[in-house]
Length: 106
Image 1: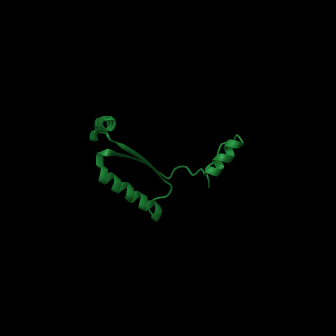
Image 2: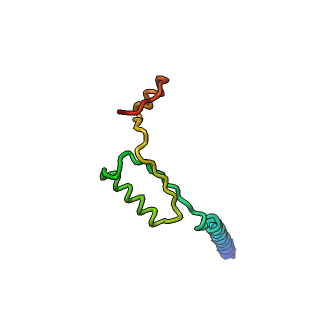
Image 3: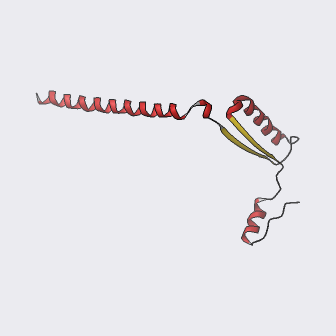
């Protein structure tokens, strides 16, 4: 008789655990569906091009940008900056450590 009670207790614990897991999964699934509405999903992508399209490396990224804009349409916001001021990270660090203003590279 004690073994039968032990099995009932074990079965009850398993059922409570299973139902708790199902409940938690359902709650998170519902919250995910609520928060991830497709019309609200917008991805921002920022690209800085150091060279123009004549450089193969930059041209590949421009093609990738165009493909991403075509594939995602309204769901993607592309921000591209072409040929920014040429200030090298080394000159910025040097100027910062010595209280100077970094000058653009020649």
